[in-house]
Length: 355
Image (cartoon, rainbow, N blue to C red):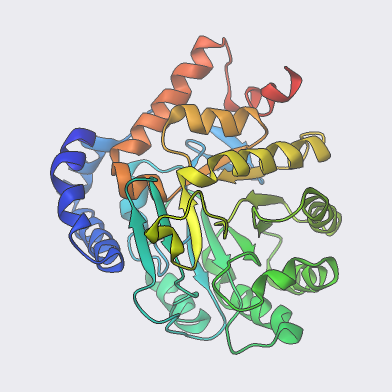
């Protein structure tokens, strides 16, 4: 199926505007997973082996998750589960409904295996999202909610914006990711500063129902800034961290790279892994990390896990490789565990740090 996607589906989608192609892919998965027969076919084609692990107080059938941004409005949750993901992160969701930045705002670079987006947290808002989640069938795998700040909300009141979303949507999800690192909302990354971040975490925890709260950080920070964020979040009882969001740096000066926005995909891989290793070393491997950025195969996922990530996520590789990448990554991880004589994924987390 990977070859079929590369030969037929991907070239067809490449002819479309990136955002339209994304939208049609979501609707296609939703339609395909609507019936029992459709879900059965998807399982036969894509479902990977089980590589069970536990983290964040939750149990996962495998460590591979869908990163935030792919299914902003939680429209195809059962489809993602059927394809074989171990967990799903939907959103980002803000307190207020907002349309996001002007179009076009999503771009593909096949040359770099990378995406650039400047979506700007386009989403239905927390009130509509909570009503949607309430009537949807919840997947049996862990469901995380990515939470952002509304553009109209001042930085001074950001903590209230995040807290309102968590309060409204909290009953329907298993955990929360505080997104203070998107480059597409003006000055949002200012909220990574210790005092502002602490205010947000404390406000969110009031309404989290003791469910895990994580912080998602930018890859463009200095190492000392990353350590400071880790100390703040960990000290306030956050369950872990997501490393990393998209980057504002560029691999070269080609025309596509002149587009503003956050860059994801292959160019982010090395820096993301560096940040994972930095956090794991700083916390002695005792704080869960979700590793995301440039994972395209099982080797990439293994690199992040062995450098300290307990879980990993993909987004861009779904665009460039299709759903077959899920099975390739998870089954590849299973083979690596067996070849190393390891009986659980937990045993592999951070082993490269001791080499």
